[in-house]
Amino acid sequence: MKTVSQSEAGFWDLLEAFQAISAELARFDDAAALADAALQLALELTHSTVAFIALTSEGGDDQQVFSRSASPADALPPGELQRIVEATASRSGPAPSTIAWNDSSQGPVPFQSYVGHPLKAGGKTIGMIGIASPNGYPATQRRAFSIFANQVAAGLEIALLEERRRKMVDTLVNLREDLDRSERQRLINEERAQSAERVEQAHEAAVAALHAVSGHARSGRDLLDFYRGLTVSIAGLVGAKKVLFWQLNGDGTLTAIGGGHGIDEAFLNRLYPAPCAPERDDVASHVVFHDHVFRASRADADGTFGHVLDALDVTDALAVCWRAGDQRLGLVAAYESIREDGFTREDGWVLQKAALASGLVWQLKHAEVDLQKTVERLERIDAARQLLLKNMSTAVEKTRKRFAAELHDDALQKLTAAELQLQRLREPNGRADELLKETQGLLAQTEDALRRMLFEVRPPALEMPGGFEETIRDRVTMLKAMTGIDADVQIELPDEVPYEMKSMLFRQVTEALTNVERHSAATRVEVSVKAEGRAVHGLVIDNGRGFVVADRDHLPGHLGLLALNERSLLAGGWTKIESAPGAGTRVEFWMPVE
Image (cartoon, rainbow, N blue to C red):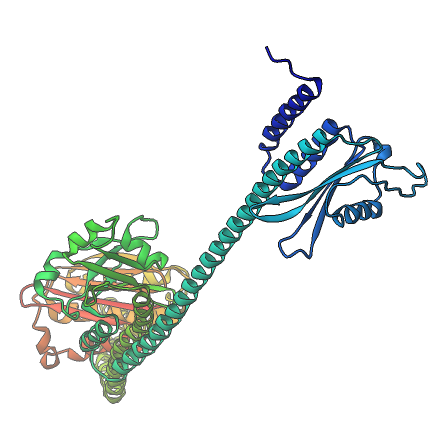
């Protein structure tokens, strides 16, 4: 067996130690951590006092220094460390040297030897590593340190490359994020530009919609023509083949209004009234009462509203609320878009503007119709007033003649007869008791005639509480006494009704009863006067012979019927007269209570 010398054995032990150290250094991927670990290992293995590593940047203009000392007392000040690094770097190769520096706590510290070695990796010098000790370094130790330095250089280069790789990856990631942000911003800007363009187009379309609605409003056509022309204009603005208005009815249902653009009878026949109310959770109710914009297409991925499209048998639909201010009129819908991508949000906005404008015009058209009806009614009232004024002098004259005739034919004749009877009482052999009794009867009849005339001119009980019902019942009692006609009377009139209204109502009833008394030949009559809110409803029905209402102007007593109608019109109400030969007569009137 070959014997190994003690120095050779020590050499191999040292190499094994450096090999283990090299493996340990391979664990680090951070340059600073690896340098710190390498310095600690160098101190332990070489029993040095100080170890340092100086790394230079690729350009050589920047330097990073790491140092370690065996004990805190041997730590080098930054300035002295820089001096030893510069001194070591200035030497062409390792050589013994003595370096001293001043320290206030330690004083001069001599070094008998130092070893410095450049750190080379990948054909370039990345720095240097050095150790210093008061003791010397044998050749084997310097040689091993050289191998260790190469391992440290390789590890540092790998760590530096890893750091540069991480920085490059981070840079690429940041660059990618910047590119993504830039792309997102570009898309946002592009979307904003497109949105601005769409908004501008929608604004122009909305202005066109308002012009179209106002143009149709000024056309002076009736509601049907206005509706047809409006749906044509809306169809052109939103690109629809069909446009239809749905009207909200008083019973809480939506019904389609016929005559819309592109709407035929077959399409209308498929539609049915749809319930619609604020508390309901259906499409129509959300559109009408919550101002939702409904937009659906068969191309939609979820197909949520497929059942609605199936019911309408259309490929796509757009609907908005049709309103005038706070009044909900219904909804306006467009069907079958002429564009491949269907209806857009901008179409919904345009449709909303058209619906709001058309709602106001629709109300205006209805107001015009109502105003025309009111004008016609006022014209009829004015004609009635003029006719009443025209007939007033005749009526007054006839009333005077009637009063004069009744006074002459009834009361005055009876008074003349009573006077003759009183004169006969002067005859010596006259029948005084009998004549006096006849005279009393004539005076009683005269009193009754005068009382009846006074009753018709101004009923004395009309102003007292409950006097209206009492007066009507007195008139009915007179009617039965004179004609035998039975009467059914129902009076429900508050006492606070003004006297003028009571007087007018009394004359309405008595006028109708007078016609029954003189012309009907009835056996029964029904009289009803009832308050309904701030108005009064009256009814007089008889079972008499009746007449043809159209011929009433040519019938005896027609002025009484005319007075019934004129009196109601003057009070702001109305009168209806219904009759037929053999079917009796029905007189109905309604008057507001001021």
